[in-house]
Image (cartoon, rainbow, N blue to C red; front, top):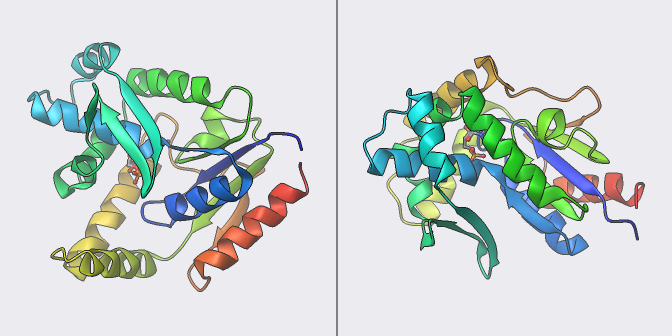
Length: 222
Ligand code: C5P
């Protein structure tokens, strides 16, 4: 079989990483979570008291920062300068400010360079906001996953409760909506469906349904 690239984009908490991981596993491909890279940078900036509005300082910091993604038993592990930050990057202080760090042109240029390095040779499933439009515009399969804000908030809420975390549904709704707004309205590489991406509204679909659709699109290309 030919090793292709699969780009999965969409708004916050649309289930991109869940389905991307399963698709990658089924195909024996590498899964790359590009959001985790922006989250790791944001975490480091917060820890070093660097303003997320300060593009020059962020770019300078990024130039001496390593961000590594390793496949693990329970999904991907994220290492920031050799330290495991897999859990830290999911905390709300990072989630609610990552879109500020991600809006800067030069930050994105460096991230895209790194992401393109991971994608050379194909055999990758990459998820994010600009994969089909900017990172791998030549991806053989491009998917744009959508779901209503309500549905996405409820899913995240249930996930939190299952993990034993505190969770406030109304707050989740407004945080998800706010992040979507920042990501869609930024000037550089905003969240947008690529013209040639297939849109899948997952609101009333199961994970298996969505994986099945993407596998179907993939089988036509390999
Ligand atoms: O996918 P995830 O929700 O972890 O992404 C966190 C944030 O990183 C997004 O809200 C967005 O601001 C940024 N991001 C991005 N481009 C990507 C992936 C994520 O701007 N390709």
